[in-house]
Image 1: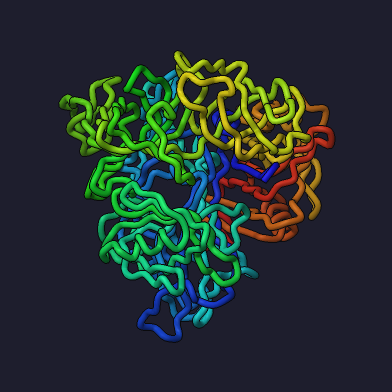
Image 2: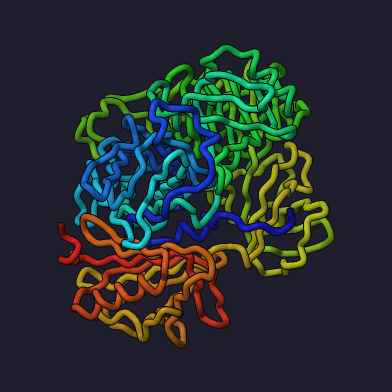
Length: 639
């Protein structure tokens, strides 16, 4: 692979203050066979696979409880697709989808539904300076959030259809970037939430799928195995069954031992039923068959037999290194938390594995910036009593870690897995096989979080080895993202081994604009099926009026003319959100028509967000997603 499309820059997202909010569910019945689905008692049923994901946002952690995902048939019958409350950190789902449920459903047409989230015990963490801090979630009126319910209202021409003996995949995307406005000037920081969720049978952005659950059976002849689906980190529950297909190149890690293809599947077959597994791979868009490229099992799964900590190494001193943005999974239960900072200790007995490699490494491979999953024994920081009404905690909390106190993980007899790491920054020089960058961030953390002492690295002149990857599209001054692995501690330069390079043309742009609480009925200079031209002289424009592009912030008010929002030629999702529910369109012309109708009737739009590719020369954002927020409810949508 040379140049590929990647997810948005966190450096750019961190500037985002969008007030737009939408909830959308689109698509038609899936096609293809149900070969990847285990049999159920309903021979004439179709099957709905529900996957949960997130578009990146200004968060290191965003943990809330998902209470339900309910669909309603055209005849009014309601169907629950989520069998139990599931606590999820959406910030961990920016690069993949997590399979949440496999539900047999009688064939039929679904017209609408609801999604319920509970913020009562939310754990939302943002970066402030050189550390991460807990933020408070409030609604648009500044009130603390509890249970939030949003109605799903389908586009009239594109209902969700379940077909006999066929499978449909529904990807539910909680877009953190568009759902939240972060104010870090307050202590603690305040996050204003307007929940924006999209869901699609054919997602605009394809992502790897994660399938987690205990092993049911293995079929070495068919090169597949079956699991009881247990999403996220649940220890129990009936979320359906899924068949995982493997190939000769599927990578296996079982109890810390690595293998590939048939030998890996044989090793899995030797494990007893109930062994916890996690697979990462792709779901065929036609057959809905899931094929894994990576399989973890036994104690190689986070929290199975050993505590596990995920995050980026921000500094190292001898046999200890500090992980920030730390996400911890506690052994042998479904408990996970966000200790922010963890000191990990390694030794001669620590096994080091590089994801996708069969070669064992020593602990020198662990360097600053590297994303790691460390396994061992976790000791939480000391806690102090705290009032349940304390502003620093959530209702029901009775203890709080001492401010700044880190947790500790003893991995001297454990393992460390090096995971693929994403760096981003400005290109300084380009040469054959080498790229020099000024780093601005690593994964979800800003560069100020990292101390490169002892590495030999200079983050202002960070050398990336790119091998045979094409760099033809890059020039000095561009911004770029690179996915790969940090070089061993003390061995730089080069500092990083690049495996994928994402150039400026493939970096997404975001447009956000708001017109205050009163809104405006004239946000555009012109409207048509080919585009919306924003009136950048409208006096109602509030604090949000910018385009985030190539890690820079363009003020719309300073442009000679208002930017044009044009529809993509591929798949897009266009939505109108208002208090209580939303309406979504796959066709931009239908969206534009409804938008014009609402504005013509005197309804004021309060905010708008658009996502896509920006051409600064043409001052045009070609959008695969546009969402408009109205404060007034459309009477025609009331039942």
